[in-house]
Image 1 (cartoon, rainbow, N blue to C red):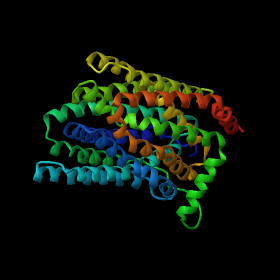
Image 2 (tube, rainbow, N blue to C red):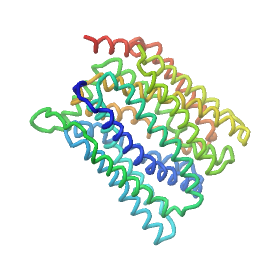
Image 3 (cartoon, helix red, strand yellow):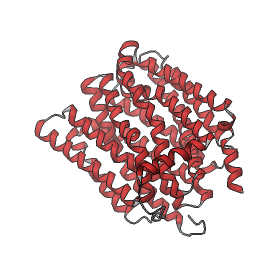
Image 4 (cartoon, rainbow, N blue to C red):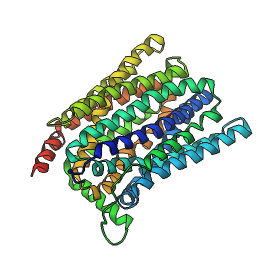
Length: 414
């Protein structure tokens, strides 16, 4: 995008507002579904399977979605997923009304379809930001997007826990419809630059291969991706067990499960705020690597806490610190990726990268349920903590990873 374009701020803030409104209602429904499964089944296997369904589309479709994002109307790619989520919310609500229950198979299908929709939506959001703001503002705007997402994650679990207690599930699900309607209405007024023509015909497999090639040739980013994939393999089983950790191991309630999510997200909001204000570091890889260590230490110690309400209080503190560190990895790394490739190639690269980062998640989740039943859900947190620290060590000792941002900034100045 030409940095001389004026009035970009009102446009991007309108965009962020639409994402906030659709995001908060969607997350309330997502939390409600997971809590419903936890309360009704108490099964680690059910939770891990639900999480697998949420990740599979990202793994299987992302490499092919990327080239489409580079070509298709990006505003449409943001609107259609919200419509899909709203439609399946209506289907679930009708099912709950007529049968007074939600069949597991229908819940799983709904989670799968929501995930497919998000597989298109999330990389589209990542791809449009560089086209809507000046290059020097990319890191700050990513920080602000992280703040919006964190605000959603603070409000949604707290509000969701309250609504879960007083509103029947069949009606609570319909919040998705309301959020989609308001968010889409705002998004219609947002100006998103149209795609540049790349070539004469769309060859998805060819474009995907180009995305793989462009990522592999970028050694620093390639190694970062491999480290992230290894981290995901061991961390996702722990991440999928948060409701069970609170409600089973710490003997807590749905309200406390919502509190943990809100506290974690409050930490993310603080971290995102710091990035949004002071985000132009000379070497952004340093805070990214530090985030691995902080997340690893706090997650690992969470698994060593006593399984009672005293342990839960420390669980709250540790999750606040982990939340504070999370945006330094997500937001700063995404800003570096966005600056590493031209906007017209970004979709295909993000598609491949998102798929590789997510690929190992379902592999870990296959074993998460049986492993949690065998050794205890708390031990998954210990394993995840050790893996995060190992990822931080790997990122630090590999020079091309540790110095990636320094080399990127030098290349951008040429």
